[in-house]
Each structure stands twice: as C-alpha cells, then as structure tokens.
Length: 93
Image (cartoon, rainbow, N blue to C red; front, top):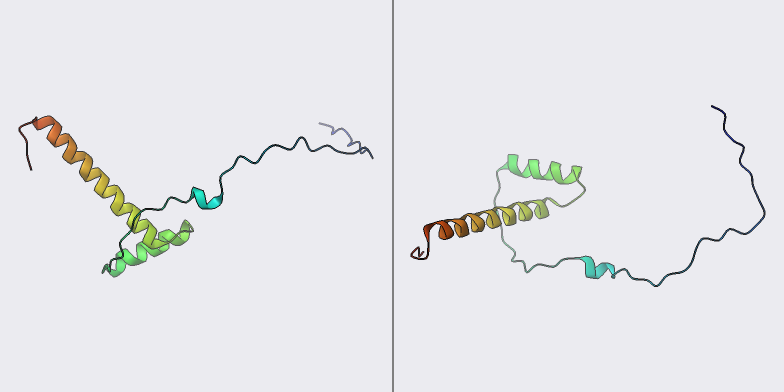
C-alpha cells in the first residue's frame, strides 16, 4: 500500500474558536469526607499487601484501607436495611 505524500503549506493554521472555560476548579473536584484519625495495628502481611497494591496503583495504602472499610460498612448497612424490610414494621433493634 503506497502512502500519499504530505503536502506542506505556508498558510496559517486555525486551531478553532475560543470557548468559555466551563470546567470546575481542581479544588472543587476533590470530595472531602469528615474523617477521624485512628491508630490501627495490622498484621505485617496485611501491611505489605496494601503497600504493594498501593504502589502498583500509584495511591496511598491508607486510602485503600479506608475505602475498603467504607465499602464494608455500606454493605453491612444495606444488609441491615434489607433485614428490617423483610421482617416488617414490627422489627426493632
């Protein structure tokens, strides 16, 4: 298959038209949750696992652990809600 030769020109190149900046500021894209600092003792193998995984994904291992716990809590809350729903209005904690 033969390639067509590229034709160069001295004419000006127009990049397009200027549009109004509609993107939010980077600070507005960061979701900030209320957090509480805790001290957590992990098994060494768990610590190494999260450190390696975080390095592979270019993130912080603390953030990964926090997200894991948040997902676990959401899952437990959903299961609790489903139990209350299936047991009816007489169910109380």
